[in-house]
Length: 264
Image 1 (cartoon, helix red, strand yellow):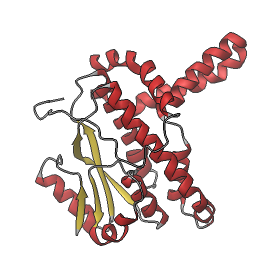
Image 2 (spheres, helix red, strand yellow):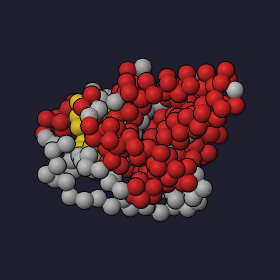
Image 3 (tube, one colour):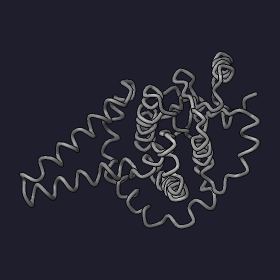
């Protein structure tokens, strides 16, 4: 038996059949392909783009290299007996990441079904982005520090999935990484242009990697207009680094609207 968490937006029975097929082939944990339900504001557009970058790199890309897919919080399916045993061990609001850590520490592979879609409403306002990402960052750091002590055992036992997950959690949020690379490149250009060449090169490689990970359908006029919001979102993310205390102790609700008729 398989349990699906937060899957009201998996759209038809054929998708459920594919989930069941994956489960009965031996997959105890499955992540479906979460895509944007709406792209009606600049923030929602950038959130949709960020979602697909994560899908390309941390889900589809990882499974093609033989690693487990990352879980994402909705559109997930688990073996019922396993979930019943471990769900109550989740100690804070980032349940998906805690379950992911438990699965990987037990060498349980997480499959990604790229052609099974779960539609998720993207946040529309910058204030909602700020609060949501605050919770996400706090959860990431909490899981990193709680899991680091298992790293030596995972490494020497060859549990590369778990090692890879800890490395992912060591990475700063993508917009923070990109923003500081741009700032550092500009500062080194002013200080010594020859030192700045490698930083501009790294920044360029990062930009190319992002664009390769974005599906063509998202690169449209709305995306081009939404890019102007990136500096403000970078500032909000940076401020979040100083407001992490307590963010993973209670659920910070993300306000949603009704976009049942949105065709994007």
